[in-house]
Amino acid sequence: MNKARFSRLGFILAAAGSAVGLGNIWKFPYMTGENGGGAFVLIYLFTITFIGLSLFIAEVLLGKASRNDAVSTFEELAPKNGHIWKYAGFMIFTGLLIFSFYTIVIGWILKYIYVSATSLPLNAKEAGAAFGGMVTTETFTQFAFFNLAFFIIMFILSKGIKQGIEKINLILMPLLIGILLALLLYATTLNGFSQALDFLFVPDWSKVTSTTIIKAVGHAFFTLSVGMGTIMTYAASLNKDANIVRASASVAILDTVIALVAGIVIFSFVFNAGAEPSAGPGLVFISLPTIFSSFGILGNIFSVSFFVALAFAGITSAVSIIEPGVLYMNTRFKISRIKSLVILGFITYGMGTMALLSNVKEYASYVTFGGKGFFDILDFASSSILMPLGGIIIAIFVGYVMQKERVYSLLKDHTNDSIFNLWYFSIKYITPIGVLAIMINELFFK
Ligand code: PFF
Image 1 (cartoon, rainbow, N blue to C red):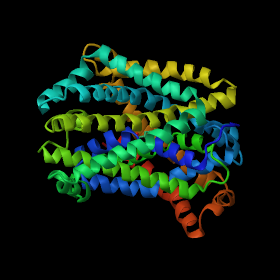
Image 2 (cartoon, rainbow, N blue to C red; image 1 turned 180 degrees about the vertical axis):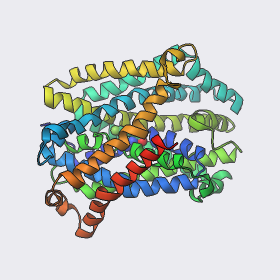
Image 3 (cartoon, rainbow, N blue to C red; image 1 turned 60 degrees about the vertical axis):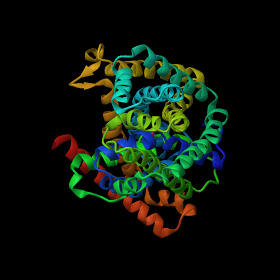
């Protein structure tokens, strides 16, 4: 059992802090850009509403009911065969994979705060060369910033739920929202603004393939932090009186709104400058700084603000990614928080270093497996396989393994019957069948 508890607002902020991350501000815009815009956004919104939110509610329900780590949650709440169901807790390892590459990207962002303040690239060519050069040749710089990010996050985690996680979210989340809103306000004055709205909200179905769909579904999991026990773990420290459905819906709405705002801001600047929306993972590192540089000193201010917001978003998510592992070691093996962090830190630091080197030309061949670099393997394995798989398992557990009366009794004070029935239908049928069909199609028929 864990003792430190989130306040109600503290939980919502921490869960929102987990959900709102690089996924919203870095990944969502570039994925939308690469996958044709509006149609991708619509599939993503649909998945968040009908699958993501249902799973989010399921995870909160499980965590709040067991008040224990993810492995024990499955073990204790299974009406029978708990000794088998505890293996469903494998999902906490997904976090280790995500954490390893996530911290590298936060390192890039920290470097870009510095770049923004000192010398913005003057044109796209220069910006592309700077970003590409950093990732593929500057081993030392990248490693230094990766370390900085890694130790900031570990420091926050070492302070625990209340003094570390809750506090950092209480400070950084309002700042992040403030910065994004200020940028949005400015974006509305740009010529690219209406083009950005068209790109994001007018679907072009000819651009949709099965890959677009699995990417949108995978991203819906990633952005809400579901399918790997993170939300379950946070909910284990939730006060008894918090409303599960309302809290979950607030987080999902906030997460979605922030992704859309980030998309509108970024594409307004991109279209305003006549740049390409499909620049890929480099979008915010290449296109944006170039565009900002044309605004003179104001551009430096925009750019610093943007990357600071991005760093805040990343840090509040990163702390949540590894917390399931900490709670697991703490409750099952009575290993202290600090010791758990050292052990998990070693593993993720090692994998992070491999992932970092897999992008560096000189070392890539040592950390490339089956034609894919370790960085891409971690990203693909977590978003496209492990998180959806975790989601299916949670849905099966809540929809088929637990008795319906039990599930109903846990939720009945939090919502009315029609919403309960809709949610239960989604957990029982839409989520497992939909996600499985998409995964099978992607993995075996392509
Ligand atoms: N939701 C985070 C984002 O959008 O960046 C990423 C994430 C956080 C994934 C926590 C998984 C997780 F457990």
